[in-house]
Image 1 (cartoon, rainbow, N blue to C red):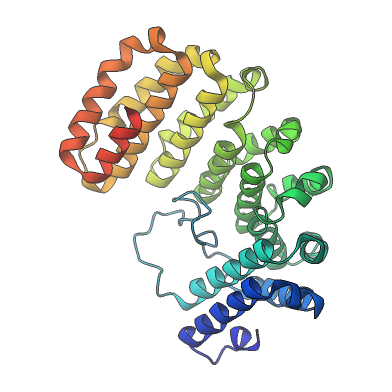
Image 2 (spheres, rainbow, N blue to C red):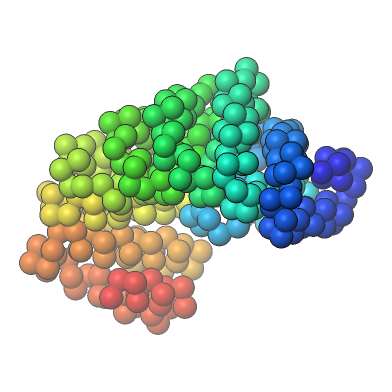
Length: 344
């Protein structure tokens, strides 16, 4: 940990230290716990996260998150792989993830939840961000404990989605999305608290916050019952279609994924919205700009999910357009071929 915290070491040395730490955590988790090292390690990692650039993307850690979550608001194509600070942030998150998955819950969860709560109450926005990162990253490993604490955790987490600092709001959405993914089905009983908060952040002024709010909606809504979602569909579909029509490709993709999940949850109750969605999605399904093939594929995938939601007979007028897009995509690009298969 002292190597990770020392600013004079280069990233290669820090990476080696982090890998060694994760190996110890994975192979001897009970020993780490019995030696009372869990809380000191957690506090040190949280301080590392808090000391980083507050505006930097912080969600690109391993395979747990949606591919576009955490991309910069301006869709900057610059490769961040060699940014030492970003690497340190990701390494810190990986260590947290390994701790939560390896160390027995009775040793890990109490100090982790206590530190997260302290951070969320901090006057320093960097520590509020760090607490939210901690909560989001450990959501998978601590899901059983978090399910029993949702009524205590969610009010503070939902309040953080309205934080004055945009990077805190973005991180709050990340944490809420992680809980929505890993605390099913228990978290669905809190829909009256969570859905209004999501609707607010869908209109956030920062594209990065909008993107991450779409991630929350996708994770949360896909298992909702139609009767729960139906009264909210007017507001929900209108806001998502507004984001699909935005200028940011990453925002469009995240909104399409959220729209797909919402349509499947609503089932045939989504039918009144199908035509409006088709008018917005149709041009995206035939985009020939190679840099936007991912967006084209996501549009086709979304349209397939809407087809599943509204049913065979109601989807018939739109069926051929989707087939044409899929067949043309197979000829254009391997990535589009994959999306075509998903559509089929």
